[in-house]
Amino acid sequence: MRSKLKARLNWLNIVMGITAIFLIGVLAVGAYNTITSAKYSLDQWENLMISGVARGSIYALIALGYTLVYGVLRMINFAHSEVFMSGPFTAYFIASALNESGFLNASPLSTVISLVIIMAVSMLVSLVIAVGLERIAYRPLRNAPRLVPLITAIGASFFLLYTFRGLYGSGVFRYPQIDLLQGSFTLLGVTITYTQALVIVAAFALMAVLYMFVMRTKAGKAMRAVSEDKPTASLMGINIDRSIVVTFILGGAAAGAAGFFYAMIFGQVSFAMGFVPGLKAFTAAVLGGIGSIPGAFIGGILLGLIEALFPNLILDGLGIPAPNQLADGVGFAVLVLVLIFRPSGILGERLTSAKA
Image 1 (spheres, helix red, strand yellow):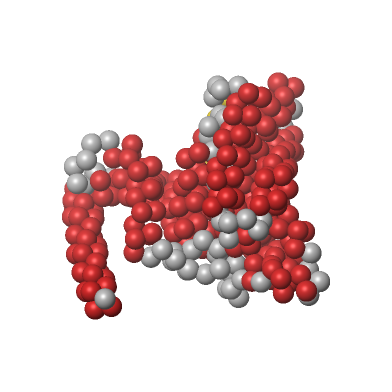
Image 2 (image 1 turned 120 degrees about the vertical axis):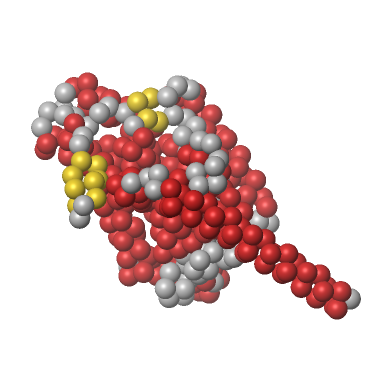
């Protein structure tokens, strides 16, 4: 029996190896055709990379929520996409009110104050929704089989989705234009818009702050202890419920910030805006190594760059029409390939790791 199983595994490894070689060959052919054709200029590649990093920064912040919750509770919070949606969708009405009053673009100082208010509202709403989910939907099921919280999370996702549709409507709402963020500048020969610079710098800063919080503060150490062993952490005097709530607070706040940055980049919000970015953020978390905070960051940036560069670099070189329309498919193909060839992700670490 063991010999038959071993033979099947060997054949499986051979098939996967041949598949990997074939895929690498196809990618190489596409990249070679694109590069030799010189269809895209260096400026275009630079713009695509900056766009990919900005988009990846948003994925990384959303992925942080998946990673933190999984690291502590060992569950995938599929309602996190609606946590991401709730903040910027609610903050839209604050932004609209500030714009109608004339305060939003009255002066550079008023614009900065307005942006801080809008971002704070977005983070606060997402934070409250995340904590509410933990208290109402997840805490009573903490000792239930893993499938039960997973189904509950999917149900909570649909509940939030259609609750916000009922509250705010099913239309697409356009964020007001921020005059201070119009235009671009050049850094080391690369043209960057002010919006992209804001998103990249702020997202990197937030990721660094959250990482230091988890690694250096007493509350962060308690979270990692709960992730490692809940009964032992409780015996050591750690409040398990409080640590889990802190986890959802951090994940919710990060999702709200990501939603604000998403609204700044794409300029619009709707009740369904969280579905695709939420799935991509989950892909980023798996790509980097779900349960690892640096993994969420690395996975998000990599996925953003892959989505920005792959269609033009590979698909266009293979002669596929309208390659940019396949960017979403590329992102989900990455998820499938990671689950096949390296299911633990790039880092494959847990929140409890010393490097997490």
